[in-house]
Amino acid sequence: MSTLGHPKTYDAYLFDLDGTIYLGDDVLPGAQETIRTLREAGKVVRFLSNNPTKTVEEYATKLTAMGIPAQVEDITTSIVTTLWWLKTYHPQAVVFPIAEEPLCRALDEAGFQVSEDPSKIDIVIASYDRGFTYSKLQIAFDALWFHRRAILIQTNPDRYCPFPQGRGEPDAAAITAAIEACTQTKCQASMGKPSPLMLEAGLAGLGIPRERCLMTGDRLATDIAMAIEAGIDAAVVLTGETREEDLTPEYDGVRRLQHLNDLL
Image (cartoon, rainbow, N blue to C red; front, side, top):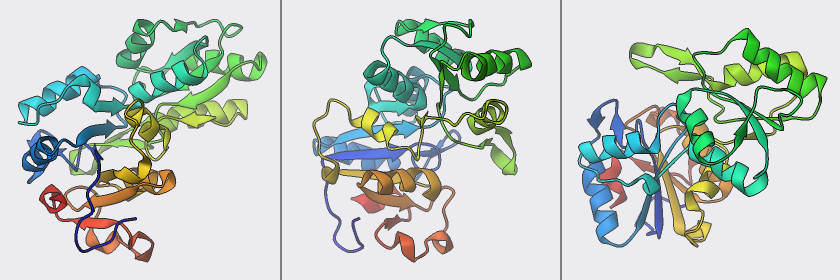
């Protein structure tokens, strides 16, 4: 990992969004200048998010409105990673998404066959789903346990989606846990941070070696853990979840940033 001192430069810079680029609807100090400077220097910039309830178009619109122009190809979400993984490893799979509309629509637009018939389902996808019902759980149970033909994956491993003032909502890990509990099946792959699959999807087609990439985020358990597992350099910003006292000796190789200006 890169160390404190003179900053190392990279060919690709990957950024978490909430807590790193912005907080809620407010852009964080240094974000606009940092992204603009990196792009002017010819660097590749990508944004990564675990959130499976928003489309890449929504993220691009939000970033652009904040003064950080973005195209859909600049953004990798757990939806993008799920589609990339399915196309790469299971292009003919019949899928059953326990998910909200953005993922369901993306699967349909990508040409994947979606079915509620447990005898035809190859892959059950557990995701953030505020419409989760017992009938959905029954379909997953039958596909995984009764027919024993399907595998289970998840869009992201988050236990909850954080809200302001410390509130939150149960996230995809809760759906995964319910399915695992009744089927005695283990999730085979997770598409969101800290899984390196998200990095693979975000860097796909760029031809940039991992040693020439830097991941920057505000969460040690997701953003930084992903970078460490994938073997790429990492920087943590103290504008979101992480505080200086959280940076124990195991993170000595991770660059500390008060805000994104410190990358420059």
